[in-house]
View 1 (cartoon, rainbow, N blue to C red):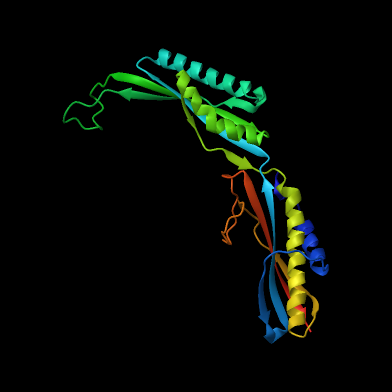
View 2 (cartoon, rainbow, N blue to C red):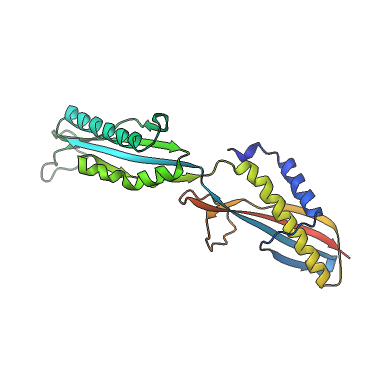
Length: 250
C-alpha cells in the first residue's frame, strides 16, 4: 500500500497530539539537554515486529540447443512443467505469470590471430540459449517460500531451472505508519517528563517535532543505522519509527 497518500499535515497532527498525551510506551530513546535556553531535545522511538503479507518470486527456466526451434521446444516444455508443479502445490493460475523470452546466440571461435572487431570474418552459429522467467506474486507467503526452495526438484525431470531469492513485502505500511509515529511521539513525551523531573523541572510545552525516516529492517537485528531502509529479504521484519522533539522546561 502506498504510504504517500497520507498527508504530512495529518501525520504531523498525530505526532503533535501524541506529544501532549502521557501514555507510556516501552521503547528506546536518546536524550539531549540544552540548559542555555531551558529546553531539552528528546528522540523517542517505537518498534513492532511484522510478518510479510505478499511475496514475489522468480524462477528462471533455460534451454540450449544447436537449433533454435529445438531450444524453444525444450524451453516450452520446461516452463509448462514448472507451471504445472506450482499449480499442483496450491498456487492459483492468476498468481503465476511469464516474462518475455530472451535469446542468446553462440558463435564459433574466431580464427587464430583474428581480432574481435574484424567483423568481416564469417563465424558460424553454434547454438542458442533461450530463457524465460516464471513469476509468482501471491499472498500465500509461506507456501511460495516453501516452493521457492523445492522447485529445483524439477531438475530431476530435465528442467534447467534457477530459483531466485524471493522478495517479502508488507502492504499495510500506510495504516501502521500513523500508529507507529504516534507511539514514538508518546515515548518522546514520556522521556521528556522523566528527564525534567530528574532535573527538578517540568515540561512546559512542545517547541518542535520532527519525524524521522521509517525503517523496515530484518526482525531482531542489532543494526541501529539512521538511514532509511526497506528490507525485502526476510519473512519477519521490524518496523522502527523515530520522532525527535524539543520541549521547553521550567
